[in-house]
Length: 428
Ligand code: CTP
Image (cartoon, rainbow, N blue to C red; front, side, top):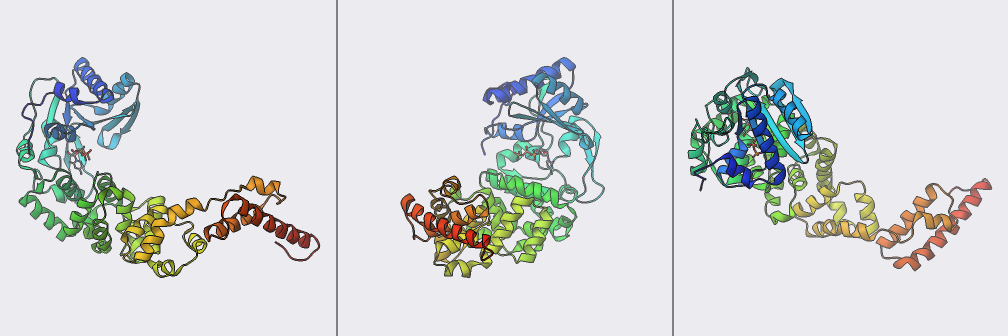
């Protein structure tokens, strides 16, 4: 991998967009004025060395990052969020996010538990990190020295290697195993052999179970946010990491099938849904609970399982209106996922055309027009519109004129029924 040999803050600043550049300048000026040592650290240094665009602004402050961040917030007229437990803070200003951590050392009492943090030097702050390529820093103030790299990060960037900094890294924090796969696939690197041995040992020792579902979900979301989530998900499955998070995730048919689709037609929701494609309902609920998936994502997962189990009925349906009834309330993301995953060509075609069918099902007549035609306000309006929609879907009426004719006959049916009710007979 070609890595930049001379990296300076000015060269990074020159490559930033205007918003990020002024945020970086504000951090630099504040650090100089206050005499606080501040370093650009982790992802931005790695990406700048790789000649990639720097999108994250992550800083390590030797001192109190939260106090520094609050002064930065004043200067940028931004919004401040503080995480006191870890002495970290985020300033958001005009769409730019600046993350600041207090330089610290970390100790882990139990595998998978959150670390106990103690303020420390920039050296401490680098060696507590996940991988050598993420353990480099560039001084913002005082400026002068080049990249700080005590763990061989530059070398590993050049060789294209993902390597942990010490043997207990995955024991301390098993979520780093998913991070390793994410970086490996994002950059086309390989995981170093010692790191791979460590990964297998932590996976086989069952240490992944000790990590909270929230933390796994966070790492899963990070994968789903990648430009191409498929390769890291497949790799995580191949390495037994998904199974380590929940045993049902060893069933990777959905992932494998989705990976055969053109990448540009597959979005994050499809990848998420594909994890559930081969699961039973009970297993699906187990995985939803494990990741503590929020409402909409949980619904996509459940609906994917439901669609798989409804394949027979979908395939047997000839009537478009019946299909719409069957799929009403099913998340569109699940429909488009199952359209890609099903091995039944008829189901693929029916589901693939479903959004277009729904769009065409929109009636030309509105509820207001029905009211003008004499339908009383209330549920009858929705009922009549629904019947027109069904007739439209099944090709029984075409165009506004025919809709109007059907509406008129339904309206008189409705009025007759209402008269009947008033006479103490039938109800509509
Ligand atoms: N980090 C870590 N262990 C974790 C998570 C994060 O050591 N479980 C460290 C890494 O050094 C990382 C830094 O915290 O560089 C910031 O984390 P994050 O924002 O997740 O990483 P980035 O390197 O910015 O990654 P990305 O490019 O995906 O944004």
